[in-house]
Image 1 (cartoon, helix red, strand yellow):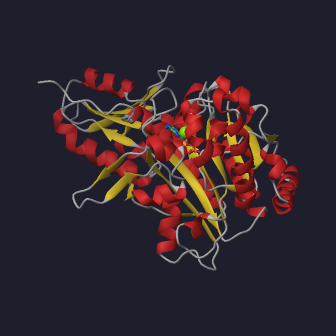
Image 2: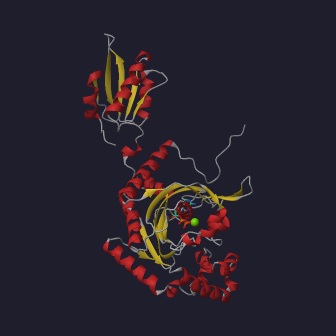
Amino acid sequence: MEKLQAIRGMNDILPEQSLTWQYLESIFQKVVAGYGYQEIRFPVLEQTQLFKRSIGEVTDIVEKEMYTFDDRNGDSLSLRPEGTAVCVRAADQHGLLYNQQQRLWYHGPMFRHERPQKGRYRQFHQFGVEAFGMAGPDIDAEIIELSKELWRQLGLTDYLTLEINNIGSAADRKTYAAALSAFLETRKESLDEDAIRRMHTNPMRVLDSKNPTVQQVLAGAPQLSAYVGEESHEHYQKLTSLLDVLGIAYKENGRLVRGLDYYNNCVFEWTTDILGAQSAVCGGGRYDGLVEQLGGKPTVAAGFAIGEERIVLMLDELNKVPAQALRPIDIYVVVSTQNLSAQGLELATEIRKSHPSLGVLCHCGGGKPASQMKRAFASGAQLAIILEETDSASTQLKLRMLDDSNRSEIIDVDQIGSKLEEFIVISR
Ligand code: ATP
Ligand code: MG
């Protein structure tokens, strides 16, 4: 029978890889906890309307990337393509937003029907933070600083660049969109089908065009920066001086508009050179109007989302995951004859109790000592403990390092507690 395969662009994360993911997620959780952010979990499936109203009808995500279907009741549902809109829906629904400040984080799978390639998948994972009820720019600086701290702890600082832009208020962008649309109308003959379609519905999306002819036209187009109002300017200037004080370097990029409609004022992206075309690993900014746009009371907000796959690719490529995080276990217990199996299980349990940070695997399923040792070497453990029967029918333990040192020693069962620390690194 033909075997079924996973859906294109949706990856299995196998045990060896999942250690890197666990490492990444543990650092992320440690960092956000350090800044007082609390976790929120929400469903992967939402009403399609939620994304249409927030991300925008005329965006790549909503026009062509969502997994949308009617359920058995005929309701239109979509797999979440991102977390911010869902976070707002959930936080507002449960009364967390009005007249309050919230610092929240989430992580989990997102779904977009894009062309799969390195760093771009149809099911991918994001972790993100969302801060509500703070008008900034201090909170903007905080979330940027938080992301930078994450890169520091992961050893990625040298490989990432912060790009920022001021995209103005919703009103500024409305005026700008009208001007851009009028300009594009005059160059209609040089535009492609996509650009012509968006010219009136969402002209700013035309700025994202990858078509060189369209890009040429855009070189002469009105600039968003000329339409940004006084208030946004002030906000942005305060933010950049905060970044200066915090020692956070940034590159100003006037073309950075982000692919979602809900942003305003400051937007930012962290990019890298080492992933080819998929250079953005984190994107965010303010979205002061979104809560109200989704039916809540006006609540200012800012946040970002990180693409986990791209960070995992960087960690792998740069060998940045510490060896101890990649070690699935520390000790492999070899049971040289089957009548020692109860003792083997007991010994493993005792070590787990006395040294809770250690991973101990006790060989199960029988087999000759030599083949058990082979598994011990392949397991990635630091140390093998071999239970052996002595001539006098008592049990002795042979400790055998699994590295190149070949160090080994025979000890009595009751010596194990003191001997372990002589042999291996206990802290994980
Ligand atoms: P891109 O420009 O690469 O398409 P985006 O602007 O669509 O990114 P956002 O919606 O801002 O991305 O999502 C935040 C982050 O999520 C991105 O910076 C990226 O790291 C990651 N990401 C987005 N889409 C994908 C995908 N299809 N596969 C893997 N990671 C993704
Ligand atoms: Mg995209």
